[in-house]
Amino acid sequence: MTALRILIFTLLFVLNCTVSAPAEDSGSPLAGVDLGKEACYQEPPHPAQACMDVAAVSASPIADVAEKRAAGPNAAATAPPPAGHGAWKWRRSTLWEKAIAVGAIGSSLYLETIDPDTPKWSSRNDFDEGVRNALRLGGDADDRRWVYNASDVIMAIMIAAPEIDAAVTLGYRDRDWDGLYETLLMDLESFTFTSFVSVLLQTQIARERPFGRNCKDGQCESEEVNRSMPSGHAAYAFTSAGLLCTHHHYQNSYGNRETEGAVCATALGVASLEGILRIVADGHYATDVLAGTAIGLFSGFLLPRLLHYWHPEAQSDAKEAGKVTRLVVAPTLLPGNGAGLACSFRF
Image (cartoon, rainbow, N blue to C red):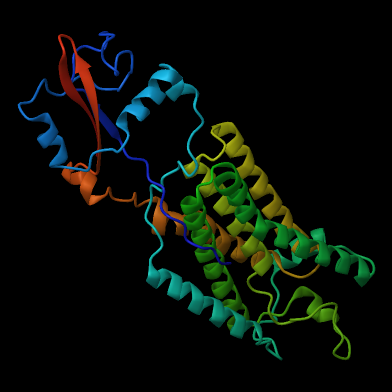
């Protein structure tokens, strides 16, 4: 999963201060224009010098004022939000975290090549056997193979769901490329953790799958006979569900809490179905699915909070110090052939 980092779109609070006669004076180019704040100070002794000491003067301020005036007082309320308006509010992924994720991906790919020849755990218990007898699809092995393949498709869809959801809302709709980038990095961290932990435990525990007891002359219903604990499909599915729930809780992508909750509930329902299908297909025991569920819930719900959402991003130094980062100066006419300046500060 890769993405190009785009310039950060940040929302800054804008403070406009007016140095002129009252706005109702029709002789001023600023008359009738709502600049937000009342006059911060009146007729300083050297207004031009005061403004130019802190920032550059706008090349065409009167044109900006004319556009505001022509748009009318309700322009701010009706205008669509600018592209990329959703400033990232939480801790960002660091270079070290990205490097660790890359290393974990490489380790997972290596561990995937390991398939224990003999099981280290082949004993059975009443709980797993009871659930297996209740849910396992009987009949021909081809029927169970069909369910097995269906669960593969569901897992693939679930893995793609958080990325597609973020791409549609943050990318296509909002043009918030920075938010999309950070969200995809969180997804990458969670799925990488799930993959590494799951495959590591599978190869080290080497539990025989339920269908392993039916193998004859080395022929089994599926591959990786001795990698039952934990269920990787359940782990991935609940990681995806947890990410969808967590992102929608904090980012409120749809702007409606009921809709956000419906997305979360649906994702959890599909993830639960995935775990059940793994038992129906005789690919895992119930305890395998429960273990995978625990890994997925940690990766999807807790890991993004621990690394990002519980750590709001600090404000910029310029904003904390109250420094002016942008200033626009516009000349204005005063009654009685007077002149003044209108200053718009951005902090």
